[in-house]
Amino acid sequence: MRTETIIKKIYTFDELPEATQEKAIEKLYDINVEFDDWAEFTIDSFREQMEEIGVTFKRLYFDLGRSQICYMDGASVDDWRKFVRSAHKNGHKLDYADLRNVAMWEGVRIGVQCCYVGNSAANYCETETACLQEYTDFIRERLGDALTMLQEAYDYSTSETAIKESIEANEWEFDEEGNLA
Image (cartoon, rainbow, N blue to C red; front, side):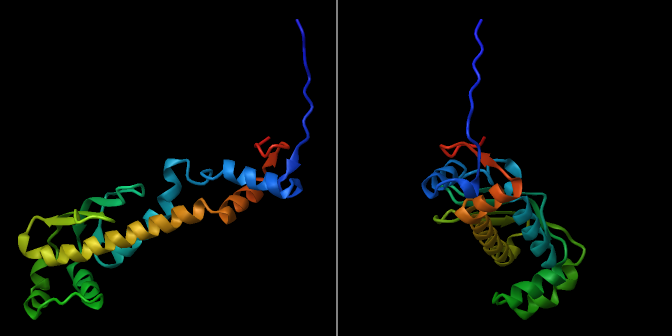
């Protein structure tokens, strides 16, 4: 039997040469997004925005790859007064009859299935009631906003700045080739 002892020099990130720092950053490009819950903060923020306009949902599915898709599962309009006011503020022209009939919808929970596809004509939004299609278009637009928020969160999380922040916060150390020690 034989025993070998290997001695390595260990460096903080700041102690690495600039070229090795760049290699370390490249190797850690997905460190902030490698877990499924990386987007939870963004999804929670979107959930709060939707609740502010009277819409709730159970789960948000998304794909930032080639399909650029965002889908709400179990979505419904729970507060019609908030929803109509918000749609109107955002430039959706709702006729007076719709606004007057909001009282009729108060307390009525309408299920909505919505999907936003970034680079496609496959966007759709369906309700249990066909006359509400104009309202679902407003929800679909909000899904486009969610996709933008998620893409921005991903872009930042994989940026050099965010990776350096993670290295510093976790006090990671490296070998001379830029690998985590």
